Length: 121
Image (cartoon, rainbow, N blue to C red; front, side):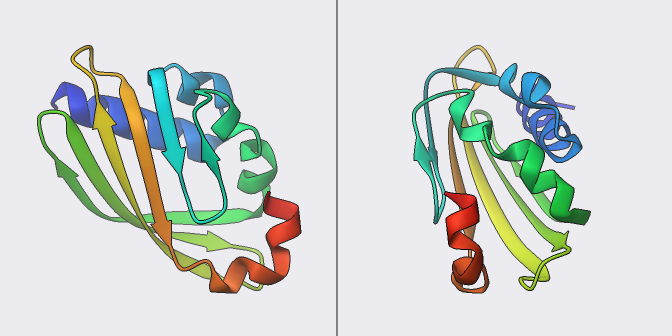
C-alpha cells in the first residue's frame, strides 16, 4: 500500500472510530478543511465535533478509493441515525512531501442536514 493510501485510510478509519488524536496525527501544518458546513485551518479544530458525529453514524460503506502520488479521493456512504439517513460523500485529500494531509475537501448534499444545521456548526 502506498504512503498516500496508508495515510488517507488511516485518517478515514480513525475518524470513523471517533479517535480525534489518531486522525489528527495524519494531518500536517499548514492545513485547510472545507465542507458545506465547516471551514477550518486548525489541524485538530476541524475534528472538534467528531465525537458527537460518530454517535449518529451506524455504518460506513466505502465505494471507491482513488490514490495518486500526493492526492486521494474517497467516495463512501455514511449511514446515520438521523432524518438525513444515508449520506453519499466524496472526500478529496492533498498530501505534502512527508505523507501528511495538508487539505481536505468534503463534498456532500447538505440539504438533508439543514434542519439539523444548528447542531453541526
